[in-house]
Amino acid sequence: MAGIGTNEWQPTLDIPRSQPKSNALLAPIPPERTEEDRARASFRLGELFSGPGGIGLGATQAAIDNPSYEIVHQWASDYDSDTCKTYAENICGSTASPTVINQDVRTLDFSVLKNIGSIDGLAFGFPCNDFSIVGRREGLEGDFGPLYTYGIRALREFRPSFFVAENVGGLASNKDGSAFRQILEDMRDSGYEITPHLYKFENYGVPQSRHRIIVVGIRSDLGLTYQVPSTVQFSSEDVSVSTALSDIPTWASNQEKTRQSKNVVERLKLIEPGKNAFNSDLPEHLKIKTTTTISQIYRRLHPDLPSYTITGSGAAVRMFTIGMSHAPSQIGSAHDSRLSLTHMSFTAIKNLFASRLGWQSPFEVHR
Image (cartoon, rainbow, N blue to C red; front, side, top):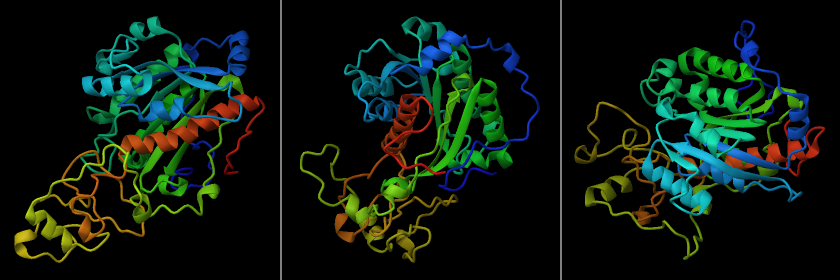
């Protein structure tokens, strides 16, 4: 699939498709709203599948040279109660914020969101369960795959100036790419010029080999073209694990040492950097007896390389030297990485609107 798989600037994917069937159902954007939105400096952000705030922090912390441009929280929704409280604390400063709605998106009443207020931007990191290369890969036929359509619904009902959607790299290859093509088609048919790109986080100065597809959409009537931030300025960054885990300040939170059994420590001592419990020469009593081989299981970090993709939970123990059997439990979770890359995406969006006529940014761009 052209446009996905590299970290070079790529235009929107050229997807063979029929004429849009649903665009005719969308009322044209009034010219006065187009002008108002092009001149906007404060963007109200709505989020679906918000999680604990990785994307939200990336948006609200994005800054450009012109301080009058800002992205502010308007509303957010997630199905998990504790996640909503964490998001509310991170973004709103209070776990009891009324603008963070704890509700399964499948039963969410959108009028509740409308009553909170209109939005100028939408973020939705829709569930990746059915698209990930780990799992059954049921795509749009699974329980979670179709949930992206609630983001599409929000685009059609709120008509924000822009959106940012995020998912795993495996989305592009799921069902031979048909699921991704359908999702992109639905985004385009909702009235947006879209820029999908596979971001390799280690190429942007993040010490983790996490690869994620981020789709940025700009409403078609605005006549603005988003471009992917370049990796050039990060080419000399040291993204090795050893550097990332060195000199951690004493005031840093979440640095509790993990407690491991004698067998676990012995097993890890025998696993070479970069290898795991399945491709290492382990004695019989230390081998993992499972029918499913998962590369993350007891995988040791290599000190000279970026970390592999950090999982939110599981048996993987993140270590890179024998002496670190009580090392901090992780370098960065999915939400930490979301913050890093979406921060750059939202910064690029703010620069795009600030320039009016196109790109004008402190960031280099791929051309």
